[in-house]
Image (tube, rainbow, N blue to C red; front, side, top):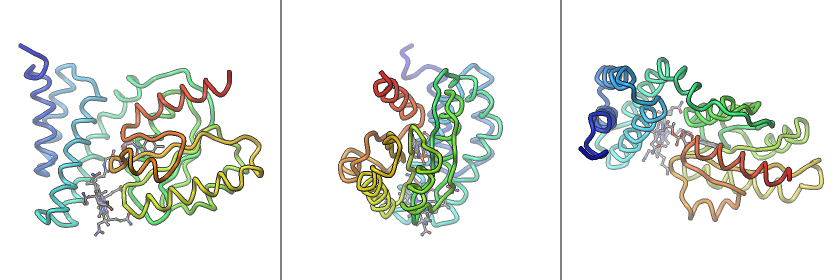
Length: 224
Ligand code: B12
């Protein structure tokens, strides 16, 4: 049997489908079953994230409404309640450094930001979370005060890309007010290369684990 059709990959696909269909009880049952069968928490959470993307597409096509997005957020939280300890174990690392994190201005999506915070923390970073709807100036003021190694900007809305861009520009323009220029990283499932080029940050990602690894590598390069 090849990997694509192994029992575990079938379970993960079923989780993604159940999330996309917003059947919370089924998601919880399948996710618990997958973990009990030895599937990694990271893969289970990724399967849920894939389902959320489909929920987003259904919303765009007006197949579901705002209540569906709210439900999707609740489903994610429900899975995290029992998947988080496993995630923390699987992501453990020996990094060090301070990360300033926030969801950018005009955006209140915080699930991904919280996931990124968890990933940074379990890799060994210290995280200062500025919350949601954070204006560029607030990121800069906090960076002047806390001297972070990394500034992480989270956001999913199109308007958030402008906020990210403005934040990056502000950091570059006022670099002389900072003791050291932090690594600027943006994250969110709606970010692609085109958005990343427009924003102009040092790094971009649509996966917390990948993003944290990229940051760790870049930080090691700068410390050398
Ligand atoms: C759940 C959800 C909501 C929930 C959010 C709950 C919450 N507390 O966060 C609620 C119902 C509140 C909501 C509201 C809205 N939403 Co909404 N939402 C979603 C949905 C379905 C899932 C988002 C999510 O949580 N994903 C799971 C997380 C884990 O994934 P993630 O955020 O990408 O994060 C991962 C990585 O990207 C990475 N990461 C994230 N940030 C960072 C940062 C750093 C530094 C790093 C390293 C990594 C990293 O780590 C995470 C783990 O891997 C998306 C669909 C989608 N495609 O994402 C739409 C979506 C984002 N929403 C959308 C819209 C339109 C809205 C509303 C405007 C709807 C409305 N009419 O009111 C409002 C916006 C309110 C506002 N001002 O922000 C659109 C945005 C379209 C656009 N291009 O602008 C989307 C894309 C749906 C769609 N396809 O139409 N939403």
